[in-house]
Image (cartoon, rainbow, N blue to C red; front, side, top):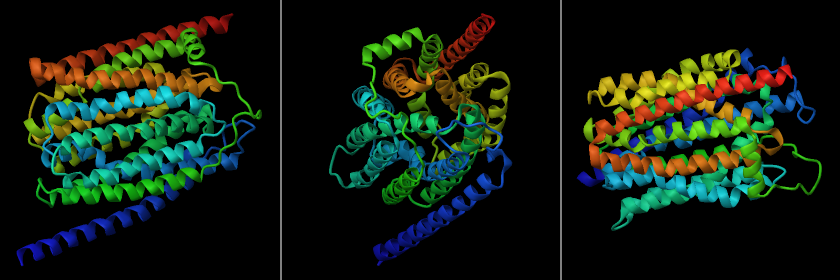
Amino acid sequence: MLQTNLFVENGKKVLLFCRFLAFLRLSFLQLSYYTKLRNPKFNCERFDYSVDYSLQIIQSNKKLSIQNGMFSMIANSYSGFLSLYAINILNASHQQIGLLNSLPSIISLLTTIIGGYYFSRLQTKKSFCGISIISTRSFLLLFALIPFLPAYQALVLVVLFAVMNVPGSLANLSWQSFIGDLIPERERGQFFSNRNRVLTIVSMLATAFVGLVLNLFDQNNAYPFQILFVMAFFFGVLETIYLFRHVEIKEYGEQNVKTPSIRETIKSMLNEKPFLFFLLSSMLFNFGWQMAWPLFNIYQIEYAGATAFWLSMFTVTNQFSQILTYRWWGRMSQRFGNGVLLSVAAAGMAFAPFLTVLSVNLIYLTLVNLLTGIFLAGTNLLLFNQLLSVSPDKERSAYITQYTIFIGLIGFLAPQFGVFLLGKIGIYTTMNISSVIRLLGSSAFLIVALILYKHLKIKAEE
């Protein structure tokens, strides 16, 4: 009788979960309509566009990009609780948490090397990107089945999450080039700042709801996590549908487009000084940034004792400050340039590890996430805009591939280095080292911005 009542009670919670997600879908579509059609910031009539895309097509693609991104944010709402799932449900070790953060990067690196150049031969990217997205989301169904395994559950999660990044890295790579072709350069700063603001609102609402629902269950109950993965998959299907609704025109008129070899691309990259300087600076900053990723999860869950509710609060407050500042970063980047503002944002990010380990008080940690979200908004926006700016138009796909390869290598090494230091010198010193490396990366961004400004000034005078 007790088991029957428990099943009925869980069934009611799941029904509430499904109804609320359906409500979110309708609400987000309405939010998309009002934000895109009624907000003058999304009106692109004052911009000049290339002959390939008409004003109507660009406006339509912008709306679809936001709708696609909204469903993507909901589908990704599981990610903030994956470490909690691994630690509390699957009993993952520190090394496995480190691998959960680093192993996908090396898989993405290898995938990008192998598949990136095939992708660069494509005259259109939409189909390639859409197939990669739905393939990635399909792994969520496998995540839901892991608790049924008799042993090695945490290891299976690590392996599946790594393999999921084979199509995931291709989806990310193709989307960056795809959206870069669809949005004119003059409008990218403003459009992406507004798009990111809308998507962050969606992500914040979805994450808050998921955290509240998970908190209704026992922290060692796998059932709500399994439902979460299944629902995330269905929103991934909607994400794919809205991607396929974009209008894409072939990049070249010729049927056979010559694609440079890896050696030619690397040689060209070395001669493209703006891209090369940006890549080196980004590698330094990303090493300090990503070495702390597993440490944040370990500190919050094991040292501070954060539950699903508090993990959602950390994410929501962080995203709330991003919402408030995305437009500001977009305006300032148009005024001062991406490079200078990127160094400011990265400097703010440098203090996140240092401030985090000052206390285990959950309210304090929530306030720290509220503060660091300001600089995270600028870092995410400006890194992407700067990458597009320093990549030559006709070779953008190849350059983004190179960038992804090098950052993927950093993404594999840095978390492992962080976990290694954790075992040797403790979490407090390790987090402070992360702050120092991030600050060095911020300084490198500033130096590069000043060098590029001087280089462009001299070139203009000639």
